[in-house]
Amino acid sequence: MKLAVLSALFASAAAFAPASQKATSTKLNSFESEIGAQEPLGLYDPLGLLNDADQARFDRLRYVELKHGRIAQLAFLGQIVTRAGIHLPGNIDFSGDSFDSYPDGAAALFGPDAIPQEGFGQIVLFIGLLELFVMKDVTGTAEFPGDFRNGALDF
Image (cartoon, rainbow, N blue to C red):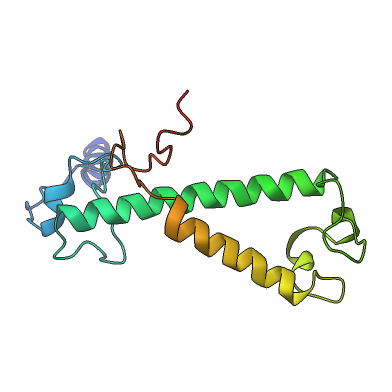
């Protein structure tokens, strides 16, 4: 009886023993030393955006990831500020509508109480201009990927 219990114990312990794994080689191994590559996954690329990519493509994708992450952070902060009741002073248009007269969040863009479509177009145009001309390393002296200071904001 003791032998049966002991053998069952060893058999169940063997199920949790690490199995030997074969080493595989992929193109992603060239980016394994980059920031963000960690065990056990290594460089995680579920969509295969880095298949047959060189270092320039990797740097471009890393740059875009940083920029979009910062935009998402600003959008979240804008939600928090406006939901707390903090709005810009003054009027949003010449007809006397104040900034706090419009709803917060997506309701300010879509729905019956939304800002006029011309105002929405101006917002999209302004963001496009920022994307094309401002939010990039225009001086060529970036210290790190995503350095958008361009010599203006140097703390």
